[in-house]
Length: 342
Ligand code: G3H
Ligand code: 13P
Ligand code: ZN
Image 1 (cartoon, rainbow, N blue to C red):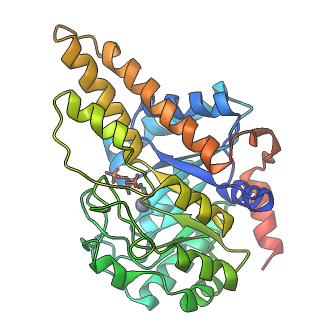
Image 2: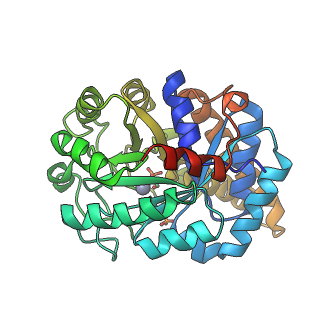
Image 3: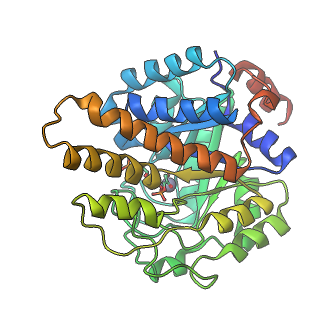
């Protein structure tokens, strides 16, 4: 079984100076697309499911699809991660389902919308860390709030308002020390979804300097960049060429992510780019072949299109070629590690 704790992967990435893409999944084709890309590029992978994904696909389907992925790809280390857990209960149910890593997003209250207090964030994060580490499971936390709300997760902050909720580098050290989280998601002006920036972002709105400052203060902290889709113009163009109506919009340039990786970013969350790739491929088939009705006629090109985006990111983030280097540690081994380190 190659489902391993995410912490092992992040430690290896830090040691070797690369980042690991964390790709969201909701169904079999998306899991297959990620595993195809991982095999092609020889990459360790983080596969993550949001609360929405867990209820859409049903935990049991998801769990068995992930087991199938690990059985069919025994050479690929896989971390199975709960994205944006909104409460300790969500994280605990994920751990019970076999997730090897969870995010306790205490930057927002349980509704996933209201910015939470420092005390609330520390309390719920610490509660999840205690529960998870006793089982060898990794915990990601978040300090500061992302913009946007289009996917139902987030405080509904506009691009401008998000600038008032960035992670404060002077608070990050205290937060990590008080919670003992394994990785810290930081808010640097991005948002989830396709509509992040109205123009190609500059350093004024995409605050990579916040990452550099946190790294300067805490060189060993594994940082996580959410909302890291690049929203490639060519994918928007395919969607619009085949009947879509997506307005002009910009994402996070890959060069900025690469700069972040040089300053301690170890996990990079990407969902939207894969959604765009799949949607474009499906629109193309259904437009060019209006008579098509076998789902495989459009799901196969959709899976292929997602796999190409994922493989490109794996190369760009530097995780390609590292599958064999990551130790296949078990949750029990990780549990002993945490016990020894308290
Ligand atoms: O958190 C953001 C991810 O893109 C997941 O989105 O909640 O629509 O599944 P979702
Ligand atoms: P994108 O919407 O930019 O792909 O971000 C996904 C994400 O951060 C999931 O947690
Ligand atoms: Zn996110």
